[in-house]
Image 1 (cartoon, rainbow over the protein chains, first blue to last red):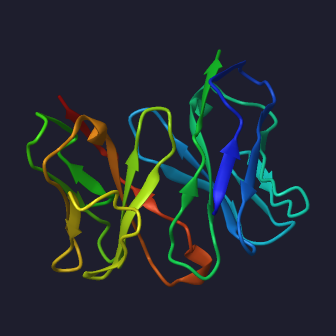
Image 2: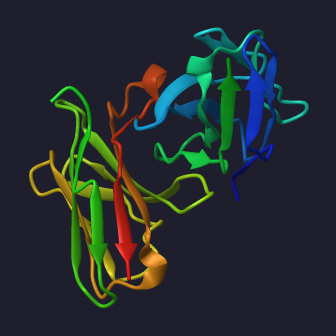
Length: 113
Length: 117
């Protein structure tokens, strides 16, 4: 079946540090890939997405590239801010089905000033 | 409203009781989803509605769980004979289903935290 594996947290970084959150997936066909973020006290929201191999999604300084050869979609940001403190979820949707997102377990990031 | 609204935000009940959780999606969104998030886990799919009908209910764990969306807008998730293992945050999301570039762009509510004692 379809699944998403994320690196385990929690992770604490200092402001302006470089961030990488690893995500790999198992899926039939060519899924669409997503990063969702949950800020404290808020609902999950879409951060970025990529729908085909080699696509790069980007938003708010975050980037992730769809790598079919390594079945990965790692999230990166060059310089994190305190406001990036949140829980980050990698997710996928398999083609041809309903919009049934399959999520990873999430990784909590805390950024200290 | 501007976003997906879920009520109650917190519900504490006793084992064996009946619970209803309500979701009010974004106006105009045709698709509505229920997910369940246990502590330390990512959201797990329960059921999804396209309009009034349940298009995919493969994630409902057993027949104690049921959801309705009678008018294609507000949805209610119903849990009968609650068990301690049902304790979780129940998330509702809505989307503009069928618009391919928007596939997977779900808008989530803040969730209803259910605690079964």
